[in-house]
Image (cartoon, rainbow over all chains, first blue to last red):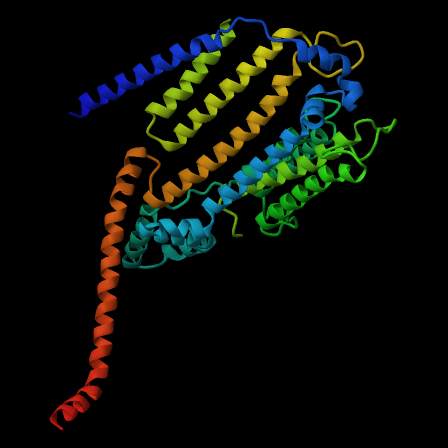
Length: 285
Length: 152
């Protein structure tokens, strides 16, 4: 019965794979030449019109900055959706099953981890009855979903030492996006990984607050507010929405793009870092 | 040619992962594989028009088309958003059912309304009992008065 069902499902999978490949094969093997009109125009005029040597940044912050604004809103929506799903209010909806026990045990496990180590040592001198009791206790503990100990000394040392380097590289990628490969989004993601490194290598006496979810959320909100203010500020000078308010300076022709890159990098870094830290389960600490 | 066939293979691998794998996390992996196949297809298509990266330093000619690269930047960010939301949903499902296996989750979700109904009935019954107990406690004071009224 179950074998027959398995074979049937495999046959279904094969059939659907064949159907999908039949549809996609002409799409993937398309041999018509790529239209070169946009490339020719950008090659001739792109640097003069936007000031950015990196033409990819010239497109997504110069010609199509409105798209980028929408993209940051998508990211903001995703962050708030993730936090909404992960937060306590969301989890309490599912509590009808048996998650209340689990959340309790998970919350207690981190506290009892430190306490259980010294408690295990006096076991040597105690009588066997107590030992049996204790082993029973540990068995029941193991039966629940006890989170495995993820932090090792190796991880702590490596991530704690690497994170400043990663953060600095992220800021480099973010601020030099108009000259070299990179930009706000790429640098922001590198900054987010630096923040995750900090959170992984975090010890209790650490002096940084950048890994706290509330701080990251505030940074993200402030960066988004700044982005909107920057995009509106062109109107004051008589331009349109997202027009360059700085004018065409000779020293720094890509000033507006650098500004947008920095703000978007902060926003993306804080947002994705926020999401990762929430997925690590630290949004309440 | 060969790179495009490999991309099709990558796409199909992701699709197979979504269809056939039971683990929800592996399904999400399949989703990201499909996303990266689409992104790489666009980048490869744009790279046919030139030879150099679209960074206009002195002496650079014959650049590749920067438009698909800029568009795929958007696609990558949205892929990250989709993955994060899917992982959060998987976490919620794990919290609700205690497993990442799609069959177990389906069974758990199927059973859940009945359990909730039973629970609701129990709470309703308890509340009703409490109310009746309270009423019994209060009634002995009132009943004699009513009887007295009836007698008179």
